[in-house]
Length: 340
Image (cartoon, rainbow, N blue to C red; front, side, top):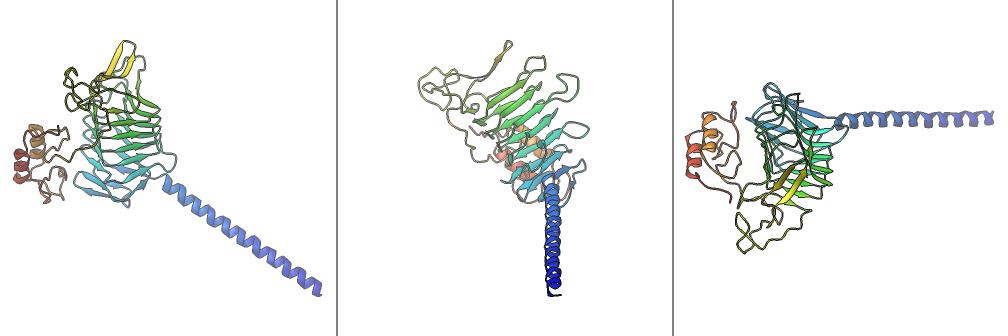
């Protein structure tokens, strides 16, 4: 009898142990499911301006979308003329997402998008611009991606389907496999970036057609980009680099590609990494100069407020929540000022 009781208690202990293990396994499965769900988060800036899903740490302020925290996931932009402001935060890959920020041209999307102040880390494509036009990628850290920034084309009609008239400037493009990839896209300005330790600094994807023209510097004395694989000398100065004297610009151009009779160069490569100057008040289109283009942009948003469509914090120069004659006056008083 006593022996039977001991056996019974032993069986009960084993059964309890098995039950506890099953419960623990079920809990781990649920946690794992939750992790996968979070890791595969995709955030949409919809065509109507809404954020989907709405419970993510991004705050809408007129046409600006401001990060409030780091985000593990990807973003798809379906609205034109918006600013994605990382506010110093990070967008990091957490699952199988191929693209960090994806801007794809289409009806009322892929035009005039700005991406600023953001770290983009760990994606196959950090920032992917498909047939986008008049977009600006500025002041970001693009790090440890397969392709840092990609300018691509969508459709069969080249060059109409390429990414045109975009500005890529003031970015740290570091430790990616490919820093910048350009696929049949032209008339883009790429300057004041730091290309550091990318396996391939720049890749032109030809598809049987020579690379289309892009500009890799902002002229003299503003300069071009910093290239970590270019051991440059700087004993001369001037637009032709012939008078003696160091000016922070290499004496010889940096050759980006020389293939199939196509020669593309950064004519004024920087000898030290680019450091952003203080913001230039009134330069709302971020081209390094306050001119009539900036005043026109502010004037088009005249009368808007931070609760209405058309408002952007970048145009609200006195930061009172309204775009009015005061903002235009401030820009006018800055007229003609430049970064360099």
